[in-house]
Image (cartoon, rainbow, N blue to C red; front, side):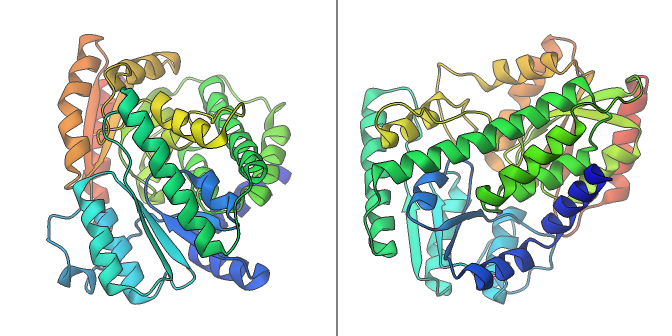
Length: 376
């Protein structure tokens, strides 16, 4: 019963994230900064005294944002701006825009001109992640961001506080990685929808509240035994997907999702920040050691190699790519990744999704047809 209660708490919190944040702010009086992309150094935001909250798209009709954006902007950009213009994000005290794709960069300009948040920051991260000049530049950019946060907070940020934040966020990452290891060993332990809810909560709940709750869940499930796993094992790759309806398709299709490579999944917590030495240098080090997403370049870390390794470690029998419509960076990467999988005789399927108008019936038909080809 304890397990079910905790999972329900995660599910309800994830489904009502905006209400949760409004209530949290009213209760604590603390300030909240929204951000885009997993490359954002949340630890700096937290150490400055703010709650870092990831801004993600929600299925909604876009009307106000359509006046400012081209129709081929991705749903993350469109729905996020729509939420801001409608006043759904009034609880935010500011927004942080990391240098990622062209759409997010230009969304920053539109956001600045058409919203009234107190704090607005562009953190221009380097594209190349393998040169000393890029590392030097990144350290300067992180120092600039730190100073901006200190000025907005009204007090300096001690290195000791930053190190405490790094330790807290590393604990969060370790717990989430443990959760993902469990789904490989025991795919029946958690559904894809339950995993989604847990990771969603990790992106906006205070880590001081989230970590003990997830730790309690993991402790309560460590000794549970499930039936032998005979379901087809699938791996999900792609960009951003935080919509329960899509993951319900997998759960209702009789397959086990044994891992993912999503920006709203594994990529959020895959690497720790070093807790040794200068904390700002450690934050820079995390970005440099990450397997780059399509918006970054590092010839020393190949995303295709990483994907193959994780698919094989999860013993997945097929890969499903979930790509946002009009997400050019991930669309450019897809042919290469598909080819790498094909070279290893790993079947794959591409499902293009557009939240707000998701053709669930069509997605379900294609997913079931793919499962049948795999013998499921």
